[in-house]
Image (cartoon, rainbow, N blue to C red; front, side, top):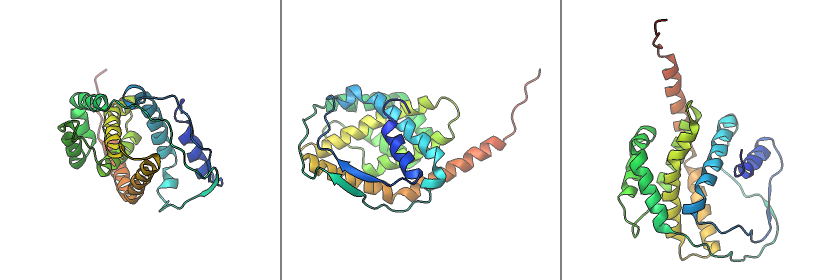
Length: 227
């Protein structure tokens, strides 16, 4: 799970193995300040690799889960504002647009027409209007998870094409939460998580559809080369 995938591996393992789950508030966690456009691309790829591998391994578990409920919480109950992080918004948007120019043909093949249209639309926006909606982002992630499951050659390449889209989504979130407090931004994150939950049927549908396509592809006769 490399360095940055350990948290999601521990959480997923605890859930799927039936351990009791709770939340412990420890106050503000101090990180080294990182500009997402300069430092977080490799972290995103590692976390995504861990997440998709765990989804593949535990598909029979998560496909049966419906809804969610809050867990018991312990510890610090106050709210402290973390240190502000300087973000180069223009850099993230430029990284997305550069990636789009490079990977657009692959995006067109991997994603549905609807989701490719959303990516294309974002690539045409300037910094003042830039936005990749949550509704599009979650479907893009769900389609990529289903594709990753059956991508037999160089999965790292598939993760690479997601990095520019990650920059697009982070830039969108930064613009949306620019003037919010940390509590308001946390509420926005929770709202987005709720949208992921509500669209789970979409994930299951594309997961099963891509499995059927992969099975049909395996049944096609292979070309026999003369010895």
